[in-house]
Length: 537
Image (cartoon, rainbow, N blue to C red; front, side, top):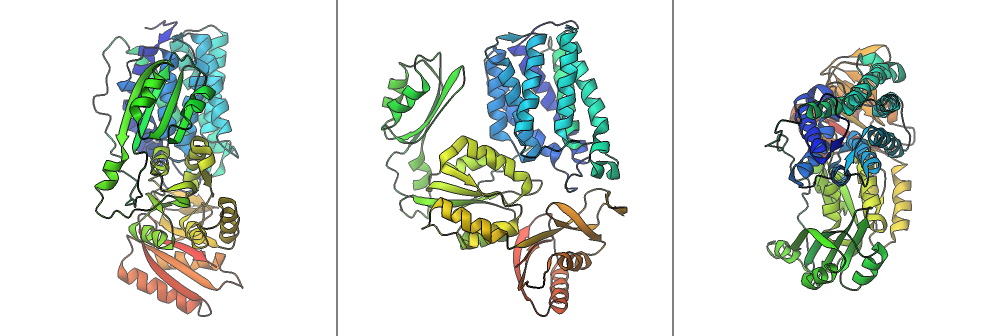
């Protein structure tokens, strides 16, 4: 194994599984490095959850074709991606799959090509790439693989070179991103990527052993989809999904053949397979037709009527033309959003970013024909954009950065208007709202030259720490002083789960006394981690 020249699907599988096991042990240390853009400590967790989706899919597959397995890995990574780091991580898998496409096994040239694609896809995933992050480390890894490939080294040596060059770039990240230098840490996402590669190398070197992750549920992911679904009469109740391999028909012909056989149809393709999703009243006819197109795999048929008819609160109605899917943290925030008109609430926020699959499950509930997604957290926007790519014409994303913006957008939503008109009105509305949040620093960091100690209360505006203090009330006032304007009329506070009654009452009294000319509204948000979400209009 020391001088391995070729890796096959079995090697690939072992590398992924050992990498997941290694990452599960080290993700908390990666979390502790997370200071950019706010010291919230969730990068390791997000990458672990993304990698966990890959590991589960890879472990259950019987494929031994590295091209097919890498595509499976890419698909599962996208569906399980959480947060910015998770989405970028998923694009690295997607690039690897592109480079390994059509390969039963891979040598050094194929591995080098795959890493080039990985970096390309990672950079494409980010609208405004920032150096000093996981992207910088990924670029270093690609450089290492290129050098090793050019020197015609074996797979082990290529991975070692990738890790060495990646580590060199990781060491430079504090010089590229001042906030890292101030905190005395390297980039968390970049470190996570190297932990993953180190695990892959371990898996390769131990590939003669029987390596199996028996329990991939080391991280329990709660079902984030909390909306109690209202329903409507289901004319085509069978959600039918399958994969066609060894295809004898083009994607266009598949779509044309199925267009009048059901609704909610999605047909996507790679070089090796076609994936079909359709709601139908007769799945047997669909499958019988599909058998003439190639070999069928991963057939899944769910009777959606069973789920709905077991609901004690069924209200029959037709699907709406347009609905909002909104991310919320806290029962109070969820209730407020529902009362204002959000049809579907997905639980999530900082350190608990929902996955792409949570959004897709909401869309496939078919409550509406089209949806507007409100991510309500900057770290969830990339995942929401992945949903847009998957669901295309059914989804638009309004890039709300926080809960206050999300609530403001919902307040002006009008389901009788077109999607385009609503996006225009909602976008205009959130531009009139100044928002902020009060939370607690999870590690030491710096605000300018001032040390922000772990446990300090911090005021955050647009994902940047703007003030800090030892008590919540002081931070609240300092934050308001920076966002209240001469023409401001209303201050709205959404209180968090960790606030005591005494802290809440004293803070509110202080705000009212400081701003007697403004109306102050207070709602129980119940959100974790954040003492207050703030909106000033």
